[in-house]
Picture 1 (cartoon, rainbow, N blue to C red):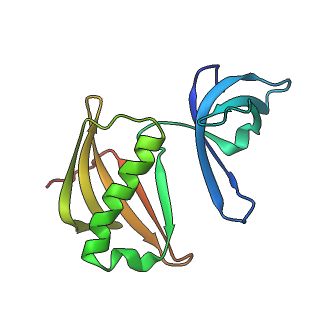
Picture 2 (tube, one colour; picture 1 turned 60 degrees about the vertical axis):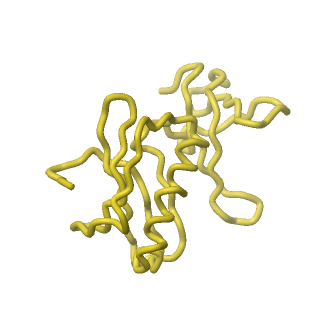
Picture 3 (cartoon, rainbow, N blue to C red; picture 1 turned 30 degrees about the vertical axis):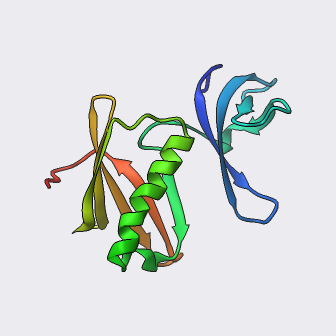
Length: 150
């Protein structure tokens, strides 16, 4: 359950039918326990009532960038660009990345590519990109390293 002041990520569908991700702060509960009031970044018009099922807490491991085109992982120069795209998403979410070290064109691992090492707070993470070939999308997210070495 969210509390007032929690940083959240709201995933919905835009007017064009495409996924829309916005960030904000929980302002409070709106009646029942299934909806909360969210103060969205850059929305000076007021608060928005959002269903809890559309919200996720903002943490380094919940920031996920999903892009169409699983072939983005096939080109080494495009893999490098994914690091900056994810960093932009993390910045928009309000997260502070202490250090971000690219791993060149990425290191192939069991499920995709390790693209960078990063530190947020005192924790070490690996930025990974993995393809879902059935839906032709890729997902870029930070994960705790598991027996992963540079």
